[in-house]
Image (cartoon, rainbow, N blue to C red; front, side, top):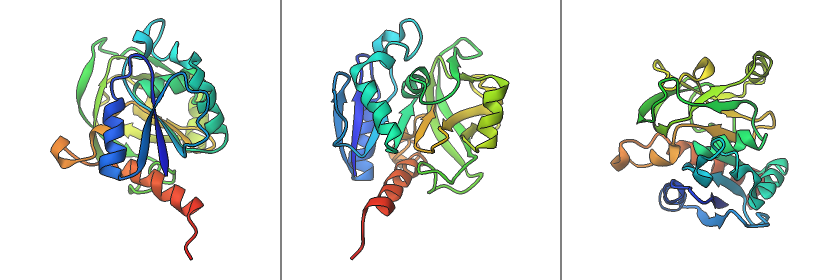
Length: 228
């Protein structure tokens, strides 16, 4: 399986994502600049955190119009796994690949620390390696991670089991219903504010995030690799 780490001007977690996939997961991965006009050669698309285009207007609002986002949408429509973390999640929201919007943290302060998450849905291509209701520890680092959507959208998220991760016990940013990560109806686009790529080795403080990447590869192999 071959991954693309999309790099926008202002991305700063692209190296973390690359390291997680190449050195910890052992999969193929390449940096892909924001002006790329084709992603056909990649099997999975990763949008890292950071401050794309300086977060001017709104977080992710300008990155949403980058050339590569047309290809990200195309990849999503083709059923390829698309993961957006932190600023990547914000970009997916701005691009309409996920429902809802992101607001400033309730405290109006940047938050950087470890948090506990509950795995609400382990029947996705991103979470199958976890147990249902498993509590995992993943770091966060954001100033605008307060997820919001209207009542109708929230009802649909619950009805379709699209809420994949919630904050366990302490909600750090005021997100509606403690939401930390959601998936699209098709099940191949995941956005989350916590950083699984920063939790892939015990030397980093924990490896709970590695299962997310392992889940993606497992699903892809089951769908594409034929055993003789």
